[in-house]
Length: 470
Image (tube, rainbow, N blue to C red):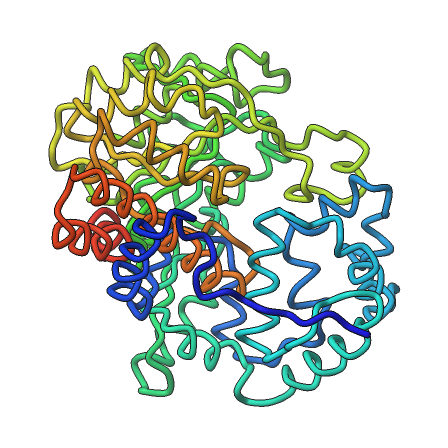
């Protein structure tokens, strides 16, 4: 007999009755707020074409590396799950997921998925091997209806704006189609892009020289000369801004920055565009370009996001067979104090510049990130990110950063996801955790409840809109 699927209205609230009552009241102020999703990786083609999603596995399993990395860790092949394997039977892939759903007990993925199952699709029995086909058939049937097309779900979930993330080599044709739909009145959803230049900034990125050739073609500049290379960035940044971008995003291995003279940078550029690039030169060039990008952001107003500290593609076999973003990225210890000083020495005092810092190294919260953001006008802290996008991770973030940076040197929440239907679930988790954190401050008489209610709205909605200029 299948077990019932129940979502407690008090989930994630404090267990202390007095604090729980306060959290309930605070959550009541924010539960229905629109979703601002200023950084993510959903496919803009979904919203441009508005074609129906194919089946349950295509929508909920294949795009979500949180899900398939757990399954892979238990010896289940990505090919069997249908990842980059069009020959795989999606129903069988879904059954593998269902048979192993117990692996997700206690994880954020379990919370997000259960929300999707209950709230989006109306299930009242738990997902399991026993109910696998029931789930697959009901979800796949629902996806064939207009109510579950991408634009309808966007509107149903109360998404006010969502930012996707594209390379400078992307022609942004999907964003052009969305803008055309907006202009004609066909659809009112706001989907914008963000400038992610790693493929033409990181000399160790696969195909770097080929990427620069394409960069030249798209920008009309000679990206193999240093002056032309900078002009190409300015050209593409302006194009992205025309297509709605308000931010850039930089996923470097470290937070290293450098402030080279033009002459030094030109010599370095000649080396990194050559046939044999050293690791030291690659790191120095990435470091210099973070400072250059900060200067460009000061000029064009794009908010700058820095996402360092991931050892990308740690599993060489997996990378060779399945490519990037397949769950094999691992957090690393990250220095910010010394690494960011060259950039901050040049631009950190510019109040007109916004740099949002993220980390996968929680040991840096109280020691480095909060004190930096609590001092430099240009700096803000991004939310608990990636591996720490979890109830415990969010609580650790708030408890370690608030005493030094406060709440208003942070930027609310972003979901950073490829899994479209998890967006409302993730925002709901963040709102519940923040309300619980604020409830403790109220219960300890460190804040009045009316202040906490205002702050809950800011954390859920206003801060993200302001920080990302939305």
